[in-house]
Length: 311
Length: 257
Image 1 (cartoon, each protein chain N blue to C red):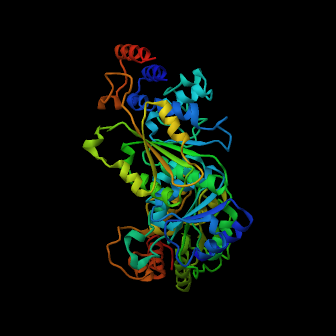
Image 2 (image 1 turned 90 degrees about the horizontal axis):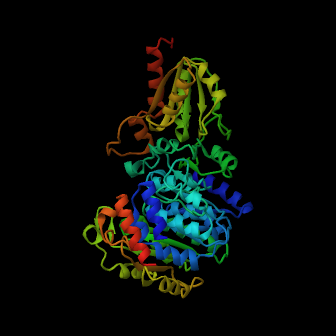
Image 3 (image 1 turned 135 degrees about the vertical axis):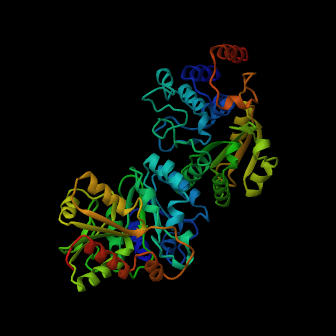
């Protein structure tokens, strides 16, 4: 999604000189189109994420719209207090772009896994948080949100080849996108793992389980009324996220169900334990942590069986 | 300024008095002679960041003398329903950047200086840091960036009062070669007596804000300056004043007038 993101940013920057791009020494073979077209609006600040956010705060106070770029963990966790005391406290239009949510940086290990960024970002009422599911949605999402008031956190997937069938770039702020209808249960996914979720839905359908699938990219602002009717239609709801189950999508949906007194059972599918140093490609890691299509479909089927849904 | 700092901190029953007293002359120099800002809302004003945010009372008093806040507003310091807290809050008029977490101000200042350069503006950016803030790694991230990009419109001032919250800097993290450290990073370094307004003003006025390296003024100050029983005493980083101590302190600062 990063190449699509940069392509979109270049297009936006052509018509708005306030847009500038800062990177903390990452983005090789991704950020060059922006750097080459706007060399005076691009800075590699060095490996210094806190300073990058501090600089962006200073730039935004003077009227710029700085995008700051790094891998999810380095964009969110390392400079978190700077984000809080800078763009959020001052309500300045800094855009924090984290690439590689979940375990997309696979062989790079835990330091590169973005599995708690949504949790910490979502706690900040003054920060918009968006997590697109594929390249096409990244484009429409960035086009729809880049000029919002206040700061934004974008959690992007790394791979531009990810396609979530049926999504086709749909995005509305404060809404989930229903990409497949079904009657037995509802799966809600966030980010690039929506692709694995969609594959799981296909497997479940083949096994005779009719699943609806919604993608939630608008984390803050969260979805509202339409989401109530969607959730209310299902006795079993599953959230799927390449993120710890605490604090992320599963927590968001739990809160929503509880506060709106929706009668449904929620199962949170996500990372439930600290990664244990066993490395591999993303598919092997997702299998290990229960996020492969097979693992997702197995979990859904078993849960439905336990709750008495005939399948 | 010292009299108001003492009276307001006594009324509010809060500490950080020594930290505020030692930057009185630095703020007098900056807000009285250096900073070009006819209004806190003018986008072309020079920017100032009190990175050592815990000395905010001194900043509010500078704003009062500047006419940016009234005596009535100043008397709300650390009361209820006021933005005038212990640290500068972003929504207080005149506060260009809120601070309170040490080590963040120089980054904000660096971004503001870069913005001025990109916008081809002559505005300058000043950031006042404490010596304890030099413990924070982020201070040096900003220092390296500003030097690399030759942000000559940036001037950091480091209040070398030689102590911090829980000890003397020489015992906590000693920086005997702080001048060489800033020089080594590529800054234009100057040392002044932080209580000599004329020297501070002359030093800053002689800086080249158009070309060259970013500037740092190493200001040698006395913690708790002007009140004998506070000077150089760790206790007065946090302690509020008793009525008796206030009387004595006021006698001393007024004697010096």
